[in-house]
Image 1: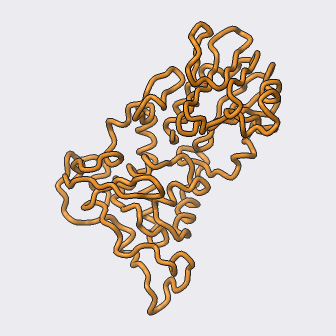
Image 2 (image 1 turned 135 degrees about the vertical axis):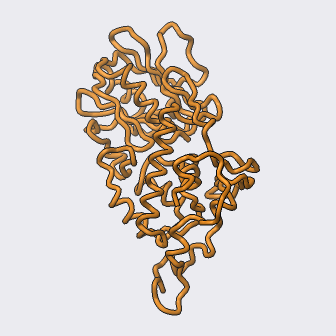
Image 3 (image 1 turned 180 degrees about the vertical axis):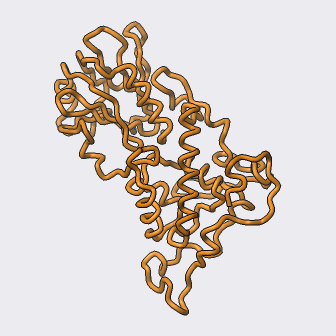
Length: 326
């Protein structure tokens, strides 16, 4: 599923092509593409005809197009959704679901979705922020994102650190790929207990999350197949820079140990067994409920063990910033 860098790449492309243009018509070619618009495909199309697109905005993995009416078009790419700008003379894509034409006769906006897990909807009064996504947290690239609030909220949780990174109500835009990459740089195993991490450790992890997202954005995102492309149909190339994700059995770029793959939430997590050792204790039922936390005689995780990455002498390949970030 596209994560922040991919969705932001699409947002930037759309902003250049559709902001300030007036919608002439909307053609819904597959009703599932607008299934979240409960009033139906015809109402969706009629409500948008004649409206001007004011801007293109993003919150986490969601996009929305504010309109001059104060409403908005809300979109999510799902697993395979694409928002493409195409001249009217270009043949329809095999999985074209929704077509927007504009009154200037210029390039069309086409929503293409092979698996139809993504979709578009009409959000009344949603120009500033659609109510449907108001529960989603800001992402770490947002100037209004609060580092202090994030650090405190993550440490209050009773879960594994990777689960926390994927919690879109805590921090948005981070998915499986970039969580693995940030954890590799921070030298933390995905199962580390969040409530046992120190503030400095969480702060360093957040810094790595930002670095990974920023670098991936410069590369146009990560494309493993033809399903993710930008508005011009071009793939991202951050897959060439991945240190952890998808590298099972390959040498760790930091120490040379073969990378491992572990099952995680019906997906996979990739990490280095040496740089990212499994925690000595998992998330116990007592820890989840808060029972016995910090009380004498009860099992708890020592902050000094859980908050810092492994400090063994590692043979480093080159000297990236994160190599010595201990």
